[in-house]
Length: 57
Image: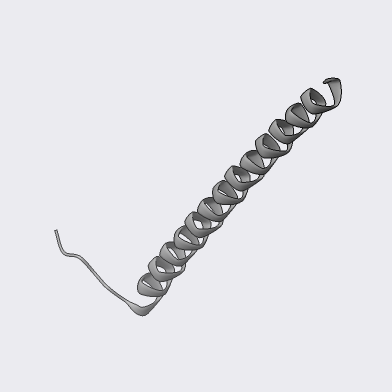
Protein backbone atom coordinates (compact mmCIF):
# COMPACT_ATOMS: atom_id res chain seq x y z
CA UNK A 1 0.00 0.00 0.00
CA UNK A 2 1.44 3.34 -1.03
CA UNK A 3 0.65 6.62 0.64
CA UNK A 4 0.13 9.35 -1.89
CA UNK A 5 0.60 12.97 -0.87
CA UNK A 6 -0.51 15.76 -3.08
CA UNK A 7 -1.14 19.44 -2.45
CA UNK A 8 -4.92 19.09 -2.28
CA UNK A 9 -4.75 16.41 0.42
CA UNK A 10 -2.18 18.32 2.43
CA UNK A 11 -4.30 21.49 2.30
CA UNK A 12 -7.39 19.52 3.30
CA UNK A 13 -5.58 17.99 6.29
CA UNK A 14 -4.25 21.39 7.36
CA UNK A 15 -7.71 22.94 7.15
CA UNK A 16 -9.20 20.06 9.14
CA UNK A 17 -6.51 20.26 11.84
CA UNK A 18 -6.84 24.05 11.99
CA UNK A 19 -10.59 23.75 12.42
CA UNK A 20 -10.20 21.22 15.23
CA UNK A 21 -7.63 23.46 16.95
CA UNK A 22 -9.94 26.48 16.71
CA UNK A 23 -12.85 24.48 18.12
CA UNK A 24 -10.71 23.32 21.06
CA UNK A 25 -9.70 26.92 21.79
CA UNK A 26 -13.33 28.06 21.67
CA UNK A 27 -14.36 25.18 23.93
CA UNK A 28 -11.70 25.91 26.53
CA UNK A 29 -12.52 29.61 26.46
CA UNK A 30 -16.24 28.98 26.93
CA UNK A 31 -15.55 26.53 29.78
CA UNK A 32 -13.33 29.06 31.56
CA UNK A 33 -15.93 31.81 31.13
CA UNK A 34 -18.65 29.52 32.50
CA UNK A 35 -16.50 28.67 35.51
CA UNK A 36 -15.87 32.38 36.16
CA UNK A 37 -19.58 33.14 35.90
CA UNK A 38 -20.45 30.31 38.30
CA UNK A 39 -17.88 31.54 40.83
CA UNK A 40 -19.15 35.10 40.53
CA UNK A 41 -22.72 33.90 40.97
CA UNK A 42 -21.74 31.89 44.04
CA UNK A 43 -19.92 34.90 45.51
CA UNK A 44 -22.93 37.16 44.95
CA UNK A 45 -25.25 34.60 46.53
CA UNK A 46 -22.91 34.21 49.52
CA UNK A 47 -22.73 37.99 49.94
CA UNK A 48 -26.52 38.25 49.82
CA UNK A 49 -26.83 35.62 52.55
CA UNK A 50 -24.37 37.51 54.75
CA UNK A 51 -26.16 40.82 54.15
CA UNK A 52 -29.52 39.23 54.97
CA UNK A 53 -28.09 37.80 58.21
CA UNK A 54 -26.72 41.20 59.20
CA UNK A 55 -30.05 42.89 58.40
CA UNK A 56 -31.96 40.35 60.50
CA UNK A 57 -29.86 41.12 63.57
